[in-house]
Length: 433
Image (cartoon, rainbow, N blue to C red; front, side, top):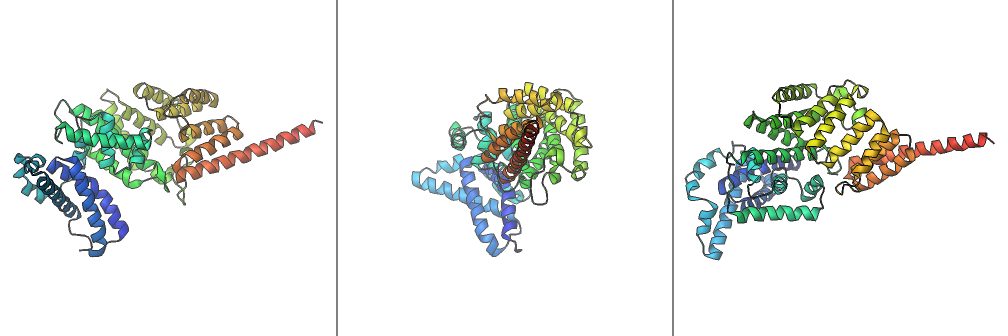
């Protein structure tokens, strides 16, 4: 067994966890039992691997340990309840013959995409299915999922718990969707991947701006999804969006990990190969018609990426695309971005008026992004004092260290500008006497 550092083991376990869960769920068709068993296998690995070294097949090792845990669970339940039939219910008779062969290919097969589809269970609402998927596949915490949905953590915890109970009590096994179920499942899978990528691109909490492991996994799964559904325009649009957005990753932070806003990024650091791939993919899928929200967002990202300088950005085109996106989506963040585009085309006053309307949305009320956008537009309108106040409020409300630091620096810069303006005003008034 090769030696490995704790950091390498931690990263490997995070990468393998959804794949192992997918394999165990596929085998036993019981999500709750599989999830518990996988967690136990991960804990066992975290304890044993640093001491004993990595096994030759880490994924197969985890699947084997988790499978034993499920089997132990079944036996314990059967003994306690005196119902050996429980074993049959967890491992259907028609699957028994396949288990030996399943063991042989366990280390080679990647079930991550299967798990995405399985988690979008027909007994669940889209919101609950996506939340369960983010927990199981994305490895996001309940708090991170709650922030993605803009709901309290307690509400999301209840939603995930109810989702697991709903699946368990429905009697409907985890299985591939029927032809009729496929469109709804596909939409839920794409939404889950979109949210996983967003959490990786802009971490909702923690010391770093980005979680590159999450973004990379979402991008990998989006490629698998596009390969599995090549005729689905929105699957292509989602992959294009991720490519065009992730292309800016290396320019989004400075030497100390500080946030660098889009208009100040060194565009020479952008990944031109990823941009070219994303644009080509988007061009091909737009030619088919039937444009959806992921394609529109990809088109917006392409307009940004194809501008040689920030000043060259075609904000009129972006404004039109956001207007189209607003007709497709009720996402309040889309409304914030639309307000920014409106300000870039028609002036900050127009953007601020749009923000006043958005402030009535309970999902945005006192949200740090609302304050940050308002501060940005106030600064552009020549009100540094107002901008400083809202930058400060945004900094107080974000849980991302990188965002908080950037917002505090912006607040200090605007406060200093306001003080200078005040001093100049005093001097001007004094000169008039």
